Length: 170
Image (cartoon, rainbow, N blue to C red; front, side, top):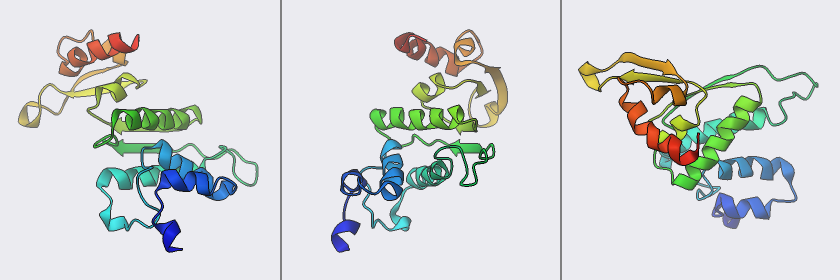
């Protein structure tokens, strides 16, 4: 048991490959960039972002096939994530974005509060708050698509997003 609890999630995915009920949530944990955690990691040692992504995986396991065990469509769910990419490597950000797209493709709504321009570029809709931070912020600068945001002269985010969209070909 001790050996298993010391396993990293990346290793456990392979170890439990023949047990889908165990390997599926482990794959999801890997998909959201948590493959480095150990199975026995105490929850108080997790960062806020790690805990948030574990909650996301918990939800994803509920909507695995978007059908409940009784064969009914799972209810629409609204997910609100506060800066889920904080501390993630770029490759893990890409994995997380793919997971978020899976939720949307499954008919769910995802609201992400985020500063990462690569994540903003993937959004269907952006509500840009500002124009600055603190007392000079808090107003709605723009409500549009990422492509529409780059045309908004008042948006600092739009100006920063322009080269990201050019790089991604969007």
